[in-house]
Length: 457
Image (cartoon, one colour):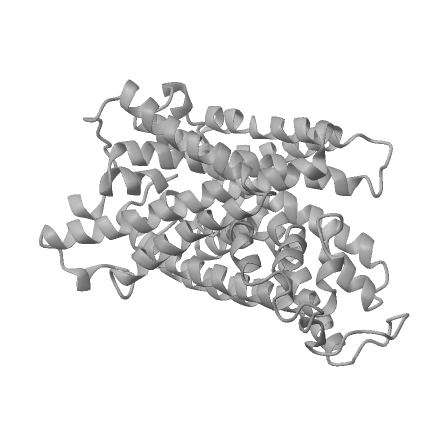
């Protein structure tokens, strides 16, 4: 795969339900200005993590490499835990994306159960991933193009409406510029703590940007492709996410958004776009399947890499003649079972819990990336390495990894004050502890990983 595939894989993994659906929850909790600030903070943290990731991905160009970074730089137990934490993130995310897409399909097919659509979508995404990495990259490229186009249209038309240009609006009573930001409760109707408690949901919305690291081992010329893709991804995420959230927050009163309807549909409907609801329904379903597509790719590579180290059953190492880890791919589809369960039990209430657990997992992985970069660079210099000779080096070391780690940790503290998301801590913290315990019981403290790096060359 080349740089354009990497950028769109990262964009495809990021732009999913976190932006199209749960952004409404963020605005309702943080308020209009608070939501924009929360997404600006999220963009900044993504930049910090991606800067660390860029250096590590070139040093360890292995497919599914996140835990390799931690294994070599921190310790094999941390690498093992990081791998399973990231697998959990995307396994849960796949379930939430399938559930959300199935719910949206009922707009057109109300008599077909949600679980039926979950099965159909699972089969389609499995097929896209089973052919070849190149085929996956191409499909994800076009998936991402559709939803990026929708975001651009939202920013342009929604922005024009805020300046008073909304000739199709039936009511004619459309907010002007940022007047919605001044709510009855002030600029921060729920206090600034509203920004803090939504940080995890915002970070979940940005999860997927790190997929560049997962695909590093299947990329042509990683030293050139990865930094280019990383810079493009950060800039585009900043424009698309912050721009879209600013338009949504300025258009819809903060107390009228939530998880019951996509804020994108609300914005387009308010400015009178014909067939807005149906058009956005299609785009959002595409976005959800795109995110699930990237998630399934990531899950399979993580299991394959774990098996390659001897930390998962050897059968997961088997590749097809096209280089696809088919067994690992099949096992990863078990995440879809979560969608079947949640679609039957309580799809709307379970959805936020799934988002929170996935958010905890991705923040844990980001913390691992930041810590891995800190120890990697320190070891590299200690062994006599020349930092100036690195193909890509993260700036302002050690400030960047320390700041990335700290901000991620603060976001985990914040969700303890949100009863809707605190379940992520109840599930996530014991999961991390269980992974460490399992590793030490099964593999012992002397376990090693054989991943190649620049340190060995």
